[in-house]
Length: 113
Image (cartoon, rainbow, N blue to C red; front, side, top):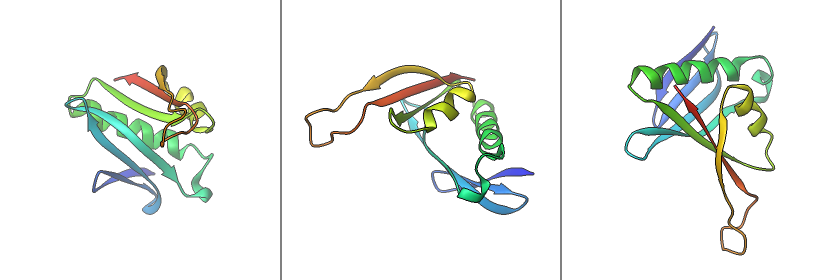
């Protein structure tokens, strides 16, 4: 059984009462949740736990009155495939070439709740 336990700035992901990972988020644009991290420990990956944790997180955000969730990942990270699989749609990107913050393109995703 997957549960979310409230922690500072997010939730601890529990699988049968054992810590499996974490979800961290912040408010963006006066109340739209911005998911800045979902991370599972290696032994809990690829077992459906991340998808179930996202579903529980989305349900909590919906019940709190939110209408959408925004998140981002770098274009060279595999997380983009997970987000697409869980129903998130690309909605823009940020390119920081030739700046002190240079990195691969940051892809933004949104899901309407």
